[in-house]
Length: 504
View 1 (cartoon, helix red, strand yellow):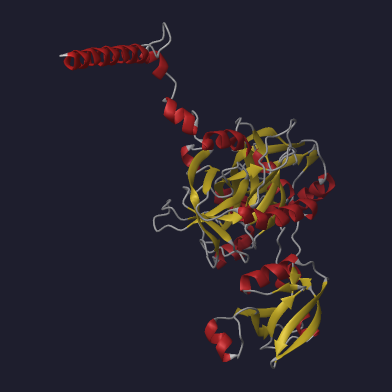
View 2 (cartoon, one colour; view 1 turned 30 degrees about the horizontal axis):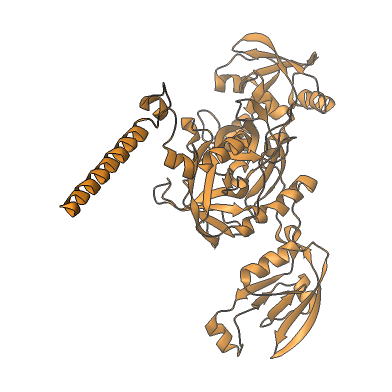
């Protein structure tokens, strides 16, 4: 009985302890909230503790976007396309040409077209990087900043061979900038963020999309007829669409690792295959464009060929490294240095040649006029050559910094005129008066920015009477270089009026 009593006593003690700890547990659980704090208040505007602990309130991309977006700009590039225009007559009508005595090619209707893209500011004083294809052929480039302010951009230089361009805007304050990163340090699978203006006609400024680096070293593409000579694209599945061109591809550190340039898509929209120019490829190009407005590359004058396993076996080579010379251009630096078809280039300027892409970039990195030592394999023996490189732009006839819109600048202030005649008055159903008829106003020109119009008849310029094209040219030549506005007295629809034109 004694043992039975002890057992009952022990059970009572354990039961009491169990009830005590359960009560304590209920009390603690019900009092985790501070006094006056409700469950709704904790949940309002705050993430769960677990998520907050692991990720913070926002993803890391939010901070990156806030840092980079102010430096991303919208670019509107206007260009001109001309077509002959003769009213009721076809442009090549022989009767028209003979009867009116005016060559048909003199009458042209400039047609304005516009391309929209993105760019990003790299210096506080307003240098902007974008794609060449965004501003190619532009006569007028307008840049819109994140604060909605707009600037007329100055053309600094462009490099079609890498599809890069640099613009400049003048602002009265320091502009937000991006930080340029190191594209050689990225790996496939790294996070990537694209920022730009997709489908700009919809007003989708500074859209942020996120993906990963899908592949590196992509090359051999032709995008819409454009085929940059130097390709080493970063592939990403961050959404890139029309209008994103020229915008930054940003890494997880918030630094620019690439310049969004192209997509592959059967529909014209994003399918997860976009390409960006590596920033390390762009940096030396940008620096040269800013410093001199042009890009100088070394030129050798050969047709280099990749060596695959079959070719290596056929040539009795022990490796696929090096490049094979399949052609030597006549009168080129290579011919003068003694290169021959069939040579295998093993070393160029102290660098071992591994493949064709590396070799082409290596030659391009050298300066025109630089003397470079080259080691070639010829007839199973190595031979040392010394070559003085030429200028690639000069040899290939490239005009990397030619401003595409200069065609309209043949005409003073962007105007094309002819002496007014009664025949022209009948042709265009306007009143005949002595003067010169405006037959062309080039979009993006000073005249286009004024109130002058096609078919206006110019009677006076700067107070001087104009009756013939000769009078016009004489006055125009005397006013070239003038900075202040020029007064035009014109007849429009039988009514005379003054128009002021401010030269650019």
